[in-house]
Amino acid sequence: MELSSLLHDLHLSSSSSSDKLLPNLPPITELLSQLQEKLIAASSQSETSSLIGHVRQLFQTAHADWLFSPDSAELQASYRSLISALIGCAALPLCQDDCGSLPAAAYQKIPSRAVTAGSALRALLEALGNWERGKGPRRGRTLLLTVAPPVCVFAVTHFQDQAWTSSSSRTAARNLQEELLRAGGWRDTAHLLMGDVGGDDEAGGREEEEKYRGILGGVLDVLQPQLTKDSWQRCEAVKLVFAWTLLQVTRPSLSPHLSRLLPPSLLFTDHYRPENCMLGVRCLHHIVLNTPAADLRQFNRADVLYQALFKHLYTTEAAVIQLVLSCLLDLLLVLEKPPSLPTPSSTRRKSCRHDDVLHLVLTHMEAEHKLPLRRAYTSALPLYIDRMGVAVCRHLRRVERVVLGYLEVGDPPEETTRLKILEVLQKTCRAAWPRMQCRLHVLLRCLLKLLVDVSSDSQLSDCVRQKLMKETSLCIKLLDAASHGQIQPLLQQADSSCCSSEVLGCLATVTVAAHR
Image 1 (cartoon, helix red, strand yellow):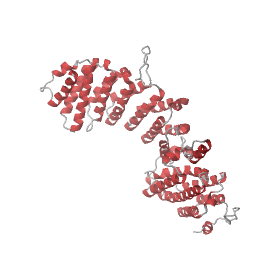
Image 2 (cartoon, rainbow, N blue to C red):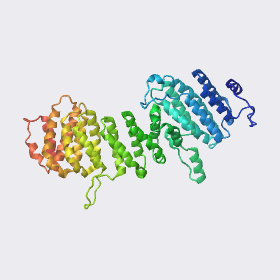
Image 3 (tube, rainbow, N blue to C red):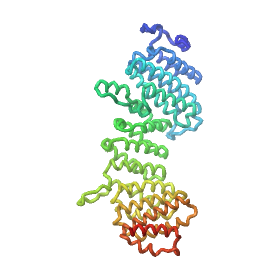
Image 4 (tube, rainbow, N blue to C red):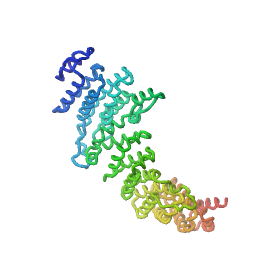
């Protein structure tokens, strides 16, 4: 379609242009403003689709110099408004309350609208990218950096497998994102958000910095109005787009935006729905891993994170507990030195946050009977015992009760809980061996009973049985070493009248190792 015919179909003015190369065309800013108004005022879906098709044809047929120059603040504002109107045509319906979830029927028309809007945005990016490459690296860069953030947010919203997307809309959104990367010369989505600085000399460095500047700040500007305490739950997509954005950003690009990334993550973490809470904890964990400790300690941010996470140790959701314990393990290193580090002999080891977390975990473990929660606790416990080192002596009574209680109850078919508890006992024996002798008899009785029970359990696979017996034998070896060989006379009294040959073989490995 010719541009003149397109303008006629749109019923747009064709006042003379001051540009001698492009006579009889209205200023592009005037045209964009009229297109935006028509999109907003469209009364039906068919009218909206027709208008978007005309917008797409405009970017495909019009001369790029008329579309994108001069690159002024007015032009940038016009394109920003038009893109906002295009994206608004495929906007997700908002929840009326804080439930944050709508039935699938509410999103029925969104995929087709997203495909239509995405086609116009893709045509814009293709024209802008070609024009920039043809005119030089700095021509149109500011305009591209202006339109990129809302387009990126739109693409991320619609390429995820959610209730408001279909296979066609996800494909269209991925193609749009690829076109955005191609238009700006970005390598991948991480490069798109964080940018890149190149060049050795000052002038060259400034040029490369402008050329490969990231759009993280712009994306956050787009998301910020929807990330307040009262509004983030009304649109189900905004939390997913924010989390996707955050998880792409690593050191050192995350730290400058910390003040804008922390509050939404804390909001998600504080929500009553487990899936939102887990999303928030993942965001916080990523922030902890990718932010310098000094920045986290500034303004007591690390203490705020600790308090926000610590209260979740009282939850009964196993998936939340597992994520929180993993995040706390890394956050504690920001707040204090590991208790396992040696201290001067004149200095008394003081209780610290590591002790508070381990104390609470062990207390909850003692009374816990649900297998999912027991698995969550035991998966994290060996790491905490490692971190505590010799300071685990302060918790030996609770550790002993947890070990005894958890070894008595099976966790078929993989016996994950028992295997992790045996690992806990091994680490405890190595770290606090002088204190293990007084606990020798009660622990040995439990381990021997476990060997006998496992050897006769027909429900266990051979692989799991062998692994359990091997780890149990190692625990007995470590207890024997901690007690200076006191277990040897007891094991030598065992014969085929009291246990199977398989158990005797395991016990024999303990005595052989001791003789060596």
